[in-house]
Image (cartoon, rainbow over all chains, first blue to last red; front, side):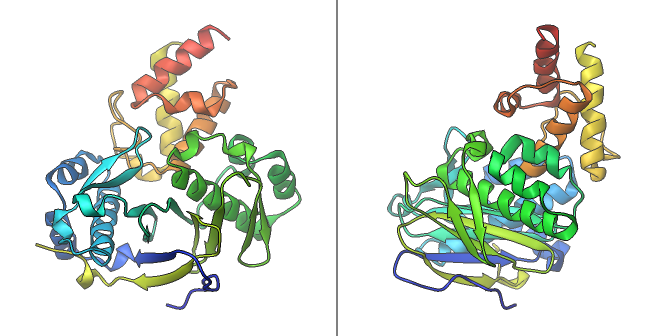
Length: 244
Length: 82
């Protein structure tokens, strides 16, 4: 599926991996689950809602697939840890510990990004079809400038703007490793055309990608880099996911 | 309003935001994560609960609790000292 990706330039290379969860049947899901580590299988069993369990299993299977394309490690052999805010990282094998990745999933899409070693990266994907209290959520997370802009928009334009800003904020805070505990209302994102982004945080060099991988989904990637990253995007078929 | 009543508000708001929870029991020991709430779901639930309770607290304070019961207890404390 063709997706507009920011023009490649000098800088670090990002690998984006996408999976349509609706294409995964029960046998493929069981195979994915069997390929996860024991702690991930236990975590999967703790989900009280089947759709949530499915998304978690597919996200971890996609992540293992993506990481194993970067390093000579079997999908089953990755061991993950997490920082105090829950952001996962590679704990084993030792030689791949600095590989940077992030995962996001929503209704109808699972996404994973892998960045070169030591490069902080975050990704968020959201389904635009859902009904939300846009002003209420913006009150919590948007800057005054962003709230003013949202209030000027109506209908589909307001929806597009809200999801673009939300995904940028979430990708940014995930890249920073804190998630939405970060005071993200203090950071302003300005959209520039169909894919450009300006961020008020100039203390650290960040680059942002805005993507629409499907007609229903908005996706953003934040990466710590001084130049727009070279980027590849791959849709993974269910048969391509790791299995044991 | 006691913590049980606040828990009932949280359950109602969670089901409003996530209709797939309609058939779930939603116990005090359940976490929003185990219920499959994304960060957007979580924020939407918290916003609607705070609105229903007419409570205005920084969102960062709502990140501590891990379970629905812990969130209800936190909001109960905030209401008591409002």
